[in-house]
Amino acid sequence: MLVDKIFSLHKMQGKTDDCPQRLPLVIIAIAWAGGTVATAVLALLGNWQNIAMILGSFGASCLLIFAYPESPFAQPRNIVGGHLITTFTGLAFMSLFGVEWWSLSLAVGTAIALMLLLRVPHPPAGSNPLIVMLGGVKWHFLLTPTLVGALALVVVALIYNNIGRGRHYPRYW
Image 1 (cartoon, rainbow, N blue to C red):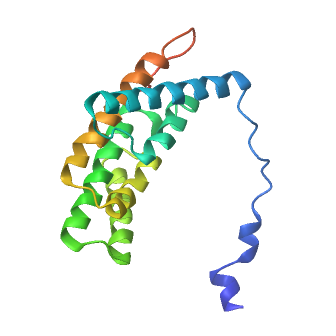
Image 2: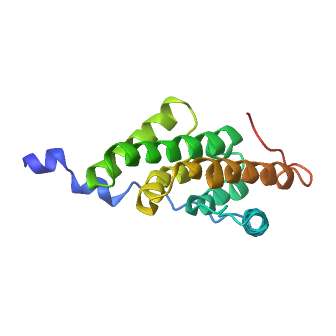
């Protein structure tokens, strides 16, 4: 009885809402092309400068930027701010506490809180502290690939998401 009051299994059955409809094929094609172009730009910049410009969470950023460009999570301030804050948080926790189960978890929780506090939530960036800490990266990772890569994604999104009629990006800065 007490367990049922605290942790009700019937809540896990879901509500009666239907699964959302699939996006129209044209939007899927636009998102595919946008993600392809943005990742190509990052990879080419990295090859040109002989540095890594790809961050694992950028793939998830591309999903938001090109499939859901009107989402608050896909706006430029959220992309750049979210990636910067969470990467910084991961670097700070790793420098101060090393890589421990508790420092990993506190870094992610702190990164989430900071994104929300500073009004720049970007869900893909929530993985950055883990990427930073498990990768054992150095402080320059904040500049490349994080800042330069996030800015490159925004530039591609600004160009790509404003091609064609009825398309407008961003919704706000």
